[in-house]
Length: 159
Image 1 (cartoon, rainbow, N blue to C red):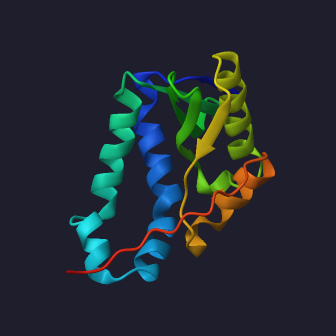
Image 2: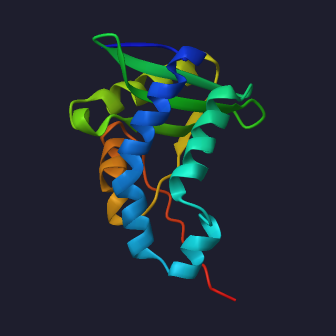
């Protein structure tokens, strides 16, 4: 496996693997929160908003994106944003083909991103994820590469 900078020819593969990777995540989210709150976040099919989010992050000038390639196929990607003022880098988005999860691809992408952040002068890295069961693998991966939990509570109420 190699990690290379994102190029627009990667877009279809990155969107496809992302939607496949996030299917169980969104099912878990839907089962974890009030249906009205879920619909407020995803009024259409979640796939529509998530595809747009991936397309937007891949095109954003303030975001750096890399793709994991194995056997000439995209198998994962990571997107990073930097805040030069706070010297903080953020792993903004990451996904690995669900057929290949658990093989270290996500960890490799994150470690690559962390090294790049450090090389650019960042002093802190952060990543945000869900607390629902669908995000268990993501939380374990972040902890495996050394991230520490910042306890945050986010509440929603239907009005």
